[in-house]
Amino acid sequence: MTLRFVERLRDVVDGVEVVLSDIWGVVHNGLESFPDACAALHNYRRQGGVVILITNAPRPADSVQRQLRKLGVADETYDAIVSSGDLTRHFVADHPGKKLYWVGPERDSSIHRGLDPVMSGLDEADYIICTGLFDDETESAEDYRPMLTKALARKVPLICANPDIVVERGDRLIYCAGAIAELYRELGGEVVFYGKPHRPIYERAMALAAERRGRPAELGHVLAIGDSVRTDLAGAHGFGIDCLFVTRGIHAEEFAGIDQLDPASVKELFGHPPRALIRELRW
Image (cartoon, rainbow, N blue to C red; front, top):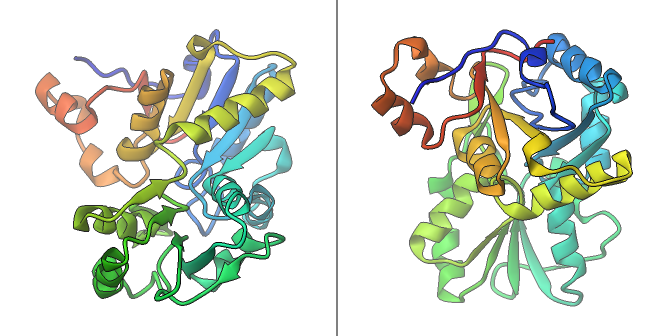
């Protein structure tokens, strides 16, 4: 099992009609954008390709777009955005009158915008929406064990609006909603995940790509780009599409000296290897 390394996006997009690109870790790190990555996606679009940004952000796509603009990611970088927050909103809309207990920081409040949800305490909740930790600067999932044990006793399902375990913020890794959701699942709780690596977010991205192109794309002509083995690579493989893997993201330390890895180590690290590895996205 050999790994292919490429220097540039243009080395792997022959025959690729649609790119499904991760955002955090690929086009920005939470504090600043990566101009070379943005230019690469823009150049691919100028050649006729369609770029759908596919993110585990627990906010609606328009909120994600506002954040991208603040970080200097131009609208011309992509055609559309699909977020796990959008899919979570559909779940809330489909359960009118049900009481929800929200776990997450105030900055994610846009996930509820326009839905008029029935908010409640944990003791009365029909389900939990988890968009993240209340304070991801200081907390970890373990801080939520008592709350989750209480929820488990009442068999309250948890809807995870961001399956990521950790994400980069500048040069640090911080915990996300996925860390809490995985702990609840380990305890025996029922968890519904929206976002990568689960199918619904890919299906929505493909539908948006078909709208932009005027026709559907075959999976063999679609390329995912991402920096997470657990979400981007596993999600792409599960959906049946190739993945270009960015090594400078959350797994950066594990990829030091990766070009010397033997096939067994490659399999252990990736499971199913990506189409190619790239240190950082550039045209």
